Amino acid sequence: MSQPSRTIPFPLSKLNDARDLVEVRCSYCKRAHVYYPTDLIQLFGDVDVDSLSGRMKCESVPGGHGFLKVERVFSGSREMVGKKIRRLVAIQVKRVPVWKEE
Image (cartoon, rainbow, N blue to C red; front, top):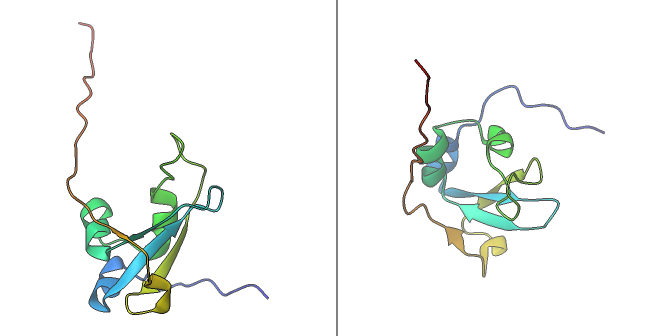
């Protein structure tokens, strides 16, 4: 049976309130990273958790492999044993000049 689609948005702030984490996994190369919701809120805003799969890209290949799988991870669970959490250190803004001939 297919799972029913969720109609009520589930923003990142709800995960933050529950002290949960976000795991993002690439199905193609099997890379997975765990993030704090507050770090993702700084980048994307307080968006729906499911929308992250289309907003983020796998970093192993320029351009990415496609959509990523995004899951909620309970911070105190056994799944977190031995996993490292990625922290946001800085946001770099790339300045690209756009020219117009007059």
